[in-house]
Image 1 (cartoon, rainbow, N blue to C red):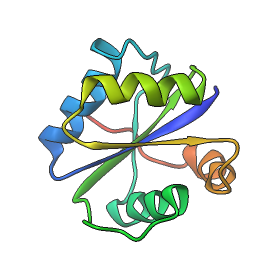
Image 2 (cartoon, one colour):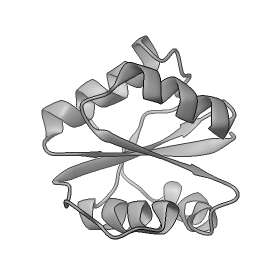
Image 3 (spheres, one colour):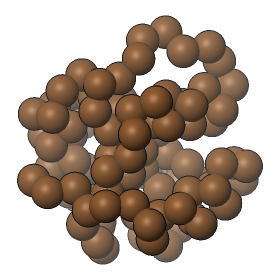
Image 4 (cartoon, helix red, strand yellow):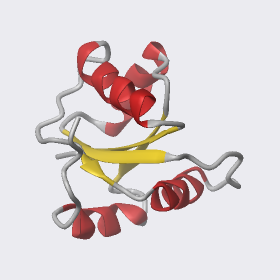
Length: 111
């Protein structure tokens, strides 16, 4: 595993569509079922990774592991325009270790 994708969405439908887009249109391999993450936590991750203030809170969120290199994931996602905000968290981000520790305890996202 090289990085995590934290997907922040306005609603469940957009969340599920964005996750599907990552696999089908970006051709990214998601080796496990994505996991639920609190919307508030996803917002906090966004602020930390982008080092900028939150402009809009999300209502639904998920996190998934990705096997690809973080830089290539970011470039690929830019080209598909998913209907949700995708934050790529790599080992260079402090929050990566927190996600790594918490990931096993998160509940699977039932789509």
